[in-house]
Length: 543
Image 1 (cartoon, rainbow, N blue to C red):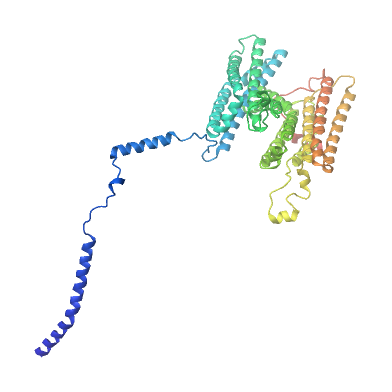
Image 2: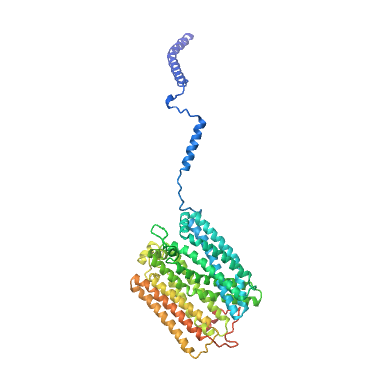
């Protein structure tokens, strides 16, 4: 048994011996190959002719000098535009410019308002007017500082965000900067002297200071308007932008229309702010005397605002006409293109202004004894205002889905689309102005009885003028649908002129009619702090 096992082991050894030898040989070859790969070799060196013999420190200095030379040789490239974070540059400029404009309008409007009121007080001897003018002048110092602050912020933002444009504008209007700065210091002198000198100078000297303040402020506005309107309707420069005439650059196509528009708008804005201030003080008054004073103050402010608000649309017509005359593309882009939605919002705001002005006039009739005969016309005036407001706010095309557009046969409504064109809108706004003027006229004559011999003929003449002009305006509006666009645009001029002529002629007749009106103890007496609600007369309307 042991012999057999020994024979088997010997056979196994004979078989495994060659296999083990092959494995050992393969391991030896692998080990030798690995050792050969990791054998030390000298590093490769370039030929002596190509080797840079410069020391390391000198090489680094040369590289720094080369980089500096490249930086010094970099050409200057002026930045044309920079972005403002989050809202963008245009919105940022608009926000600051709008804040500056609001306070600037207040600083320009309040001196006009205060000067007129103080002059009335000096003429009539009524101290209430002097107190009213002084109370509003108190707000000027803070407003003046804020106006200057926002103006400086606007200047810096223009330089930073629009450097190339601002640089060009400064190169064109650089001769106007020194007069602007001098007028600014003169305005500060007149403003603080006018306010702190109240009651310390002779009334005529103080009125002279107020007049100087208004003249200087208007001069500042005229210079700033030249910069503004040049951006919209440039003139006096070559096709490449080189200045040819500074006078033409200032007196460009839209400079004078916007001057007139801003002066009238500032007066309306100042009167409105004065009325709002009076309303706030009225609500916080603790005595009947204070409430009566602030009620009267609100009445004066609203009368000034409405008196300026009535002719304001005519200045806007003139400005729009000059814009279209300069560039129809510009006018269409503003009113019917990318900015048309702003005009829709503006239409809503203007309509609310007209409605609010009329509502105040109607409520104000409740202060006067004997106003009931005039209040019966309020419902007809209200119906006309609402109808005109609806036409004025109707857009030409409306936002609709594909199915709605297919159902209408286009983006314009088959019926309301006709009210979206300018023929309808011009007619509506002119009738709106006439209606508001009629409310103003009724409010003005509330509590008064004409005593002239031709009173009936005068009233008949006023009513005839009003009816003829209203029919003429409506006729031109309807006629505009049957003529070409070029003719339709020109029809707005006679509409505006006819309404303006009616307002002037009716006012002239009214002044002579009520030059010496008759008043009694009860009829025509004004009770401040009392405004009778319109609903109180509803039963009388329905009779």
